[in-house]
Image (cartoon, rainbow, N blue to C red; front, top):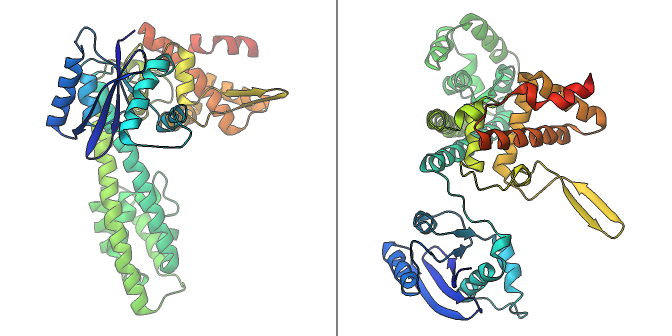
Length: 411
């Protein structure tokens, strides 16, 4: 057991440090700046109190990100990212007056490690490549969400003055208004007045600029038919103003689409270089992007999860039981890694088309009475168990072994 425990209450401009011994007495307190000088002062304080590479002092802080955390983690010490809500509950153990200060919070965090370090997990020791993939995969996912939000704004705006544009592209699969050809047509026809004057050569040129390579005449015929049909119109000046607003939204959407595509390409390239990529891609329904998102959240530290159950709970795939007296409720987890859960939803959905045994497993759960989301979580839960085994043993996914008990039961 360490002799000292360090708690850090971080903020944007400064951080409060507290060192607490095994008996709970405060050995030292310090406030440092959020810069290289502040980190050196922290390192000197820890060294003065016996911190060595062989026996580093563990640190508790309310975040798992930032330069300070990265530097502390790179030094080889155990860094515990304590949930702020959990820290707030611990604070009430020491005072009932709800007194609060930054220096006091640092002491609370240090005492959390002193009394309950076994109940908290340190940050995983992921490789540099895994950390880079996590940055890119999360950024790409954020870009996709931002792209969809902007597309929804554009769609709502078009409904107010230009419903023909929505009608022209409502058949578009895999993107709708986010498709390059749809955005290219909207750029040359921002209002119904512009759309009614389009020649055949203008949309053809726009479609070519968007990267489209076939079915030009069919697309042009459909666009002309929709744009030249009778429709309700705003007053001319109002329509022109709304067209300018649409072009502003369209430029934002173009930027979001480009960012999502660029990040997707870079994420896939980085993911392909990781040793675990072959194992992840051997699973049905996992492509480069979804596989990268899964790797980003579970990492490549093999000691992070004690067993498959821990990984399933972290992903929110396993149910949680709440039992008290005569009450006994089993429900899905709300506290989980939301990004991993979202990736698992896409993974399970794609596997229904890529794997017959996976689809049969899903259908058995539906026949058992599960709803669609519940059956998908159950399938994701099963995949996670198999993934944990494959990562620990270095084996690729084997569909015959993965679903053998269910296939035998069905026979």
